[in-house]
Length: 234
Image (cartoon, rainbow, N blue to C red; front, side):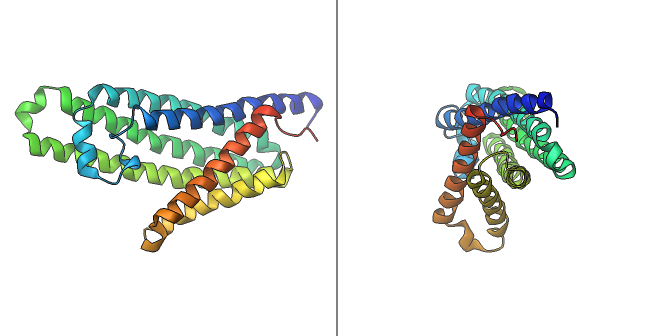
């Protein structure tokens, strides 16, 4: 790579880093405000979540649009990683891009589910088509779809992140501590989510907190390093 390309990569990496931090901040704020009580991924109670959603039409619309913005942000991050890392592994960088975008698309199912339930709750046409119990059942199906799509997108996203961290580790564009930990954390999350469907013990609260903290630490560290310093030019 020539000096111009190195400079462009470094500049792009700053944007990607701050976009990562922005996506985390938006996700945390949304979960504490807009999504509180209406996001099955923050609760294990399908019935209660469905009941809450049927009484929160405006928040459902807001959640859908926040999810749409998060999707666009994640798309930029995935494309940015591709351009930063393609010189160090074009096939793996392309695969990470495709897998990352697929994960982002799956996460959009949550936005669709939110809009569906909002329509179910506010459109008078459903008064003639359903009774209260049937409406709750339909909302519960949307909740279940949101739950499964979120976890599938999380698995795909973590596998894509593992490829990204591996390329960072191989290229030495960031400190090995960050890339090595990120690789471990990404594989830890993906393996645990898949494994707990077959080994119930992996679904314990202790293990869930452990993989959430390890993954959050890795993403925040990567985002801050890229945002502040960018990738190494050597």
